[in-house]
Image (cartoon, rainbow, N blue to C red; front, side):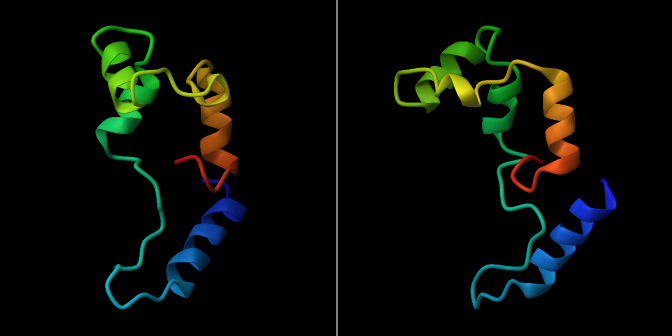
Length: 82
């Protein structure tokens, strides 16, 4: 992680207060089946599974995976990309 992004995640962790939800750094589906479908959307059976997950259609084109280098940069810089 770049230091700025790491500090932002640490700050999120320390500032989060909820009586039922434990503290977390990554508030996304980084370890779920959804992320697998995101990266493998161009291969069956993952294409069909992705369509089923999205209610019968592919997700918005802007959110579909298309570039490894852009995904890597997002993981280094963006709080929403894990």
